[in-house]
Length: 388
Image 1: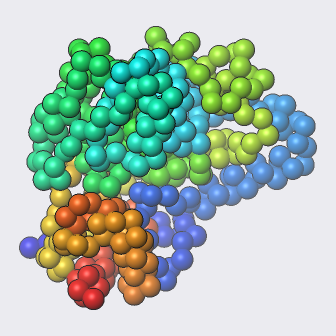
Image 2: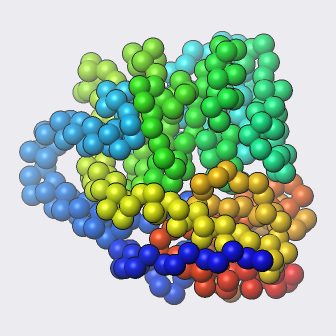
């Protein structure tokens, strides 16, 4: 039987400006910025327009202060962390910074985020390298099985492995500690796409990068920060070799300033980001994570029991769950778009769907503003929707 859903956290719905007519069950894609954080960013924008010269003139130091507070929240050294707009940008910076020769290989998995895979393909084309893909069956039950599939795809010329900590389409762990250690023993540069980690999982980067050479995580998904805010952490040997995508006036200062500064951009998301972490701490980060994990599991079980969809293996602690859609459903990008639009039109809900051979994957998320009834309505309605 379906587990009892968690009791809603009092007052949290008032923290968000979401449309109450829609069940927002896709927090994992874009997040939702709480009202106190929106107001903090709005004040910064007013300040910027009151005195643009003064605002931009003092930005490098203010960005450094914001970075230091974010680094404390992530257990990182502030000089080994750079602020970026999103993980896609961070991965591009990393790929451009690691030397590759003709015939070298970049390893990805078939659970990887599409834009990241494309970045690897572009870097490979520029250098004469090639991209190899580790195939991980959707039903692979545990981290050991995942690691076995990844290591089986490693070759003599594998130079870089770009692996998700939590996969976007299937909500499972790839870059576990044992796999990262095994790749390091083989001399492979490891790059962890941790887009879904900050705020959703406990993060302690310590003196390195979470066990990897590079670790890139979004803050605007689960840490309540404004879009677009992300971090890039690197091991010390790489810090002097990181190349910014854009050369700027901070170039001579090196990492992290030369990666962060790009002229007259909007830096207010970064300056307001500590307010997101502060709100998460006031709510109780462990309490929020526990609530969201139980609620996501409840929603996933309902989709299995009421709609007959198959639950996929999941990483413990996540506020996301993935289920397998029937064969022939959402196997193409066009099919994905059509299903997501139908769920919005007929069920007043937002979900994430990704194409997969043999039947697409539907992912739900849970955040403190969600309630059990939203998942019940989705589970009760989607079966009929899939049959039409």
